[in-house]
Length: 256
Image (cartoon, rainbow, N blue to C red; front, top):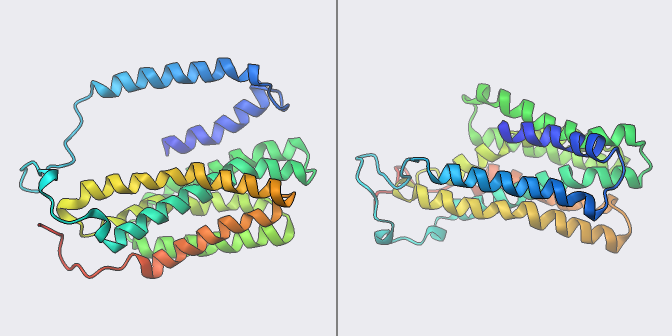
């Protein structure tokens, strides 16, 4: 939720207040980026001094020796497919948040409209995450299946009609996907849970890779319309993971 607060207000703040709705020059970016680097360095120093809990402590409070774990973490199919799920989810999420404004400008949508699109998209994620706690009685698989299916339909509608407000609505659907994928991917991992959680974080790289691929594709084909097929494929994979990919044969958490 705190993440979404930042992504909701930052696009509007940067586009409207700092740069006045115009494209910034490289020299204009130096001061904001320098401040950001200093803030991150400060936070890094603070976090390094915190006494955080050891994630490798089992239920009996014994510290798990990670070097003695005998199974390859990638041998758990539902985890491996979950890493891919996080990859395509974060990639699709950032594709919409990063490129919706560029597509809107290409379509000639007035700046007074498109400057709010990214903020409203991330705002939908904020609302969804704040309300997501009320969905705890609904299984993660059902949550992901419904939201990925609705997202797929919304992106198809956006592609076929060039109505980018359908893409804005995807934010509400994306809001609870992370938790659902994560929960299914580490299910019944037992003593491998900490290591599996670390593996899942590799998938965050999708937020850098898929928007980059979409941008290159837009340059190659000369427009953004067809490039949303990347997001459609991502949503289709998430639907597959929700229905089939997350299943495993473990009845109890793994203890050796």
